[in-house]
Image (cartoon, rainbow, N blue to C red):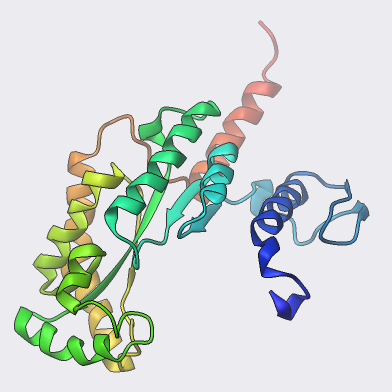
Length: 250
């Protein structure tokens, strides 16, 4: 915040005001605007314009701020809970809030809200090797180390140190407190592991973990839970709406 001359204590209000302006800049060709945290805009057109004239789908990321969950719900946007340092009870409460408010604003049922979660992994095909290699990384981490044991940390958070199968099993368990969700992100270089090792983690994710997760999430997801929007789906909806509006009355 200081780099841009802002006060971190205004962080929530900045996020709310700036995003409201950003939405207008994406959706209106000419914007007149005045707010609290930046200079006014007079007849302003932002460039480049959104691809194909369609504003992108936005994910609002938060660790602990209910105001950001509320903001995502208000606009019908996605909510990504950065849960890698938090117990599932905290994560579940914030996601439940977002789902309830998403429905309150008329975007769909709570189950249809668009949710993303984080995860943190260190994998080897032998779980003992994974634990042996990652323990010193964990113990010396300025974020994770110096407190509870790695085993307790794994019980409380999404951190999984073990085999690809163990990563799959734990990731699928996130739905017990977050419901069916649409996006899963993984930290693969936590604690400053070497580049070569991080690339090995990516290979294992891509070859052994992600295909199974995609299959399992698709198999068990209720039919009324949508995919997260993509540019292609947003463009198709925009063109269908435009065609319906332009159709002559019968």
